[in-house]
Image (cartoon, rainbow, N blue to C red):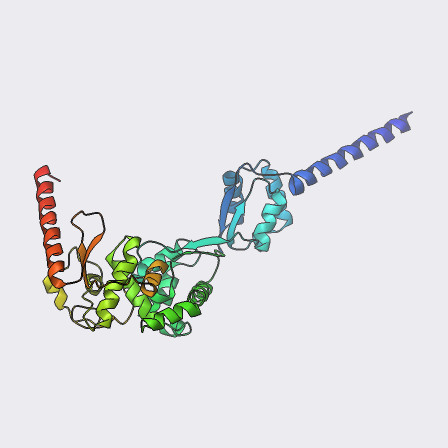
Length: 346
């Protein structure tokens, strides 16, 4: 009888152990572990314990013990790999830890958008979205030997970057980031676009230069082809472009208004002083501006000025007399607006 009791007890103990091991295996390896989707960034110097705390807190771990056991078994402290990891609620603790030790990264969207008029802003925009620091990106933007391998130099490098959203890994090196933009640049410049550039008697770089001027003139994308047409008309007639954005570029965009004294600055970028296009883009032009230069509106306009409606649009003119009339209307409207603001105390 005693023997039977011992056997039964042993069987119960063995069954309990099997159940315990089985449940632990299930909860560690199979069961959904998290309450929330969570993005975890792992840097080269990230502390494993801090990562576990961040993962447990951010993703809402149901069983922190499972995370710790899996971290030990997968040697997270020694094997963790830098990267961006999106942890989803349905992932098990084991799968989440294996992501970190095997480098199963989630792709990152790198977006260039808005007005980019300096290398510093471009470097910061990239570094804010990638692991690469802004100093490394800025150094690359000024490295002649590095940029030469892509067909650019520190002056023309703005043309390499085409604002858009690109998917790549967060840990991409500076070289890998530049490689990707060069690949996108080559893909953008199709045979059709090159043919359209040739019809305008422009190189790829010159198209980007013209597009940067168009970009500097208006925030209204609907006006891109019309303004591109104006500057191409001037260029093809041998007129000076007389583009205010190029003068602003000469003063590092510190001018509130372009005055006559500013038009005298001696710079190859001053299109009031020198004919033709500046030597390089004055900002990073969006694709829409580039395509506007390749598909300009065909018209006889040679002049334009801001609309007195202050709606961000412009009025266009064929003759200088028309242009002066438009300019006077704008100045009158501007003077009236300033007086009204002063009267209201704004």
